[in-house]
Amino acid sequence: MSSHLQIAHALTRIYNFFVKVGYITEDQMRWPPHSTEDLDLELCRDAGFSEEAISLLSQIPWATVSLQFQPDCMLVDYSKAELMKASRHPDSTGSDHSATNPLLQDTMVTIAIPMNQGARSYILDARTGNLLIGWAVEMNDLEPNDAVEFLDDMYNKLTSLNLIPVGDEIFDGEDVDAGLQEGENSIYAKAKTALLEYGWPDTFRTEDFRRDIWDLREEWDNELGEEYAEQMMTEHMAGRLGNTHIGAEGPAEDPARSSEERTEH
Image (cartoon, rainbow, N blue to C red):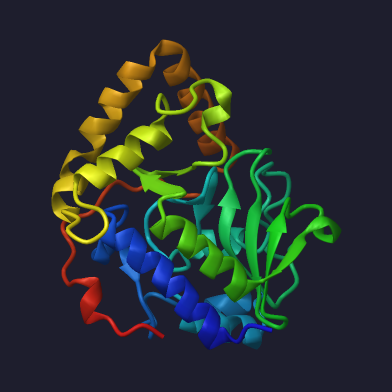
């Protein structure tokens, strides 16, 4: 069973990676200990979270922008009341968002919500220390994983570039873009090559990569052709429209402090 502190440490490593690779900036992050402005404890209780869940929330970091945690799964910003409430019933159908009728148990904390019906929810259980993965409407079908084991495995996939965050999306090397483009002719492969060219891992130029990534992504989309671009746009819009309680904020300014200044849990 993973403790809250162990889960917080594992998540912190992942978010530190996101900062290092230029996927997110420091000022787009909320690190513990959280201020009352970032985490309203009374609002947590009103939304139906148990004290165990609130304790876990108090110890974990989260992002304040609309980014993927896994392919087609968007991070939840607990600084925003509407997203906190929506996380209690993280289905992307929009069928029932009543805070008085939550789909999740009160010990569960959603860290990522599916953008479409082919994606999955990622839900921490503060009582068991598990990370539940699945379509949240079907609670009995959620797959339990030891949270730290799953998060550490995800971290290893990120650092080995088997899982690559680029722009506002994450690409999995084992699931290359729905088969439309394969091998070196995919966003995943082009992003991996670019990261290596920008010095990953030892001399990685974070600011240069962050500055250039959107131009690179446009260049890659153009190279891959109209069919690829149309499919990606269709899937992206389907996710946005199918999950309207997830905000879509733009990129922030440069980070105010480096990840090296933060003590990991």
